[in-house]
Image 1 (cartoon, rainbow, N blue to C red):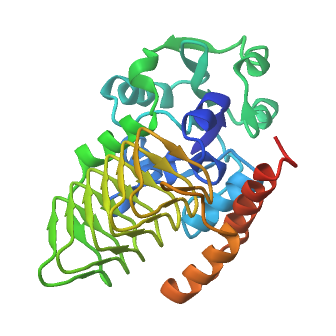
Image 2 (cartoon, rainbow, N blue to C red):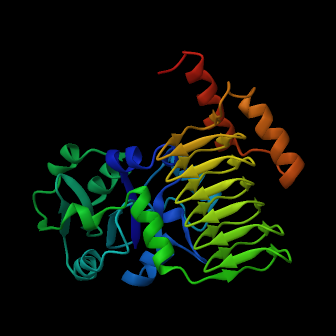
Length: 319
């Protein structure tokens, strides 16, 4: 079994998206990155993670990726480990055949091969892993080291890896209108690319609308892009209005780039709006209305919780 755990650096590197998802839950065309790992290493995939994050990932992936208890030997794998690193994949293929092995990159744990009797150590990996707290349990392991620069994903390398390995395709239920241009991209079920829109080298998860231009980007479900985005990852329900420009950005749930907004390399929090003026009104109420009107659904409890946290944070009730 291959079970994904999270460490502090992974959560911080992908914030705000890591509030509700992890890299193995991203799509590389028709398969999840978790499935890519399963194919490369030959095993079932699941989560070592519990709680809010595990529940939201299970919801996002339709149950394809959920918390699992190890049955027999298991490879615990950092959720930010890179399946695009040939060196790392080769090392982990070797680790899969060993009894007990720990792989490190700098001070971070990349992977740990557990035997069926290592229940206590498995429990240590089910929270947010702090390396110092697990080192004391791993004295009996053989150790291997890899270069951190090739071992781990950040948002930019995740996007580059997905797009580099992408095989374009149009899923059943997707609509590409006459006059739209789609090149070297995956268009997921329920996605619509309107006449005059351009999508190049990108992943459109599904149930979203593109009326502008998308280049080298990853668009999550229920997003709407009528402006210009390049090299961005848009979280659930994010919106880019006409006349807005985003480059190299990371956007959380229902983040909005309003008309005239311009941002490069920014991280937009859940419900955050950028524009030349003040942000719009109540993000959660707006999101409910927009989702129901455009996509025929209401926010999940995970989306609602993230937007409520954003509201409380802005009012100063939480750090």
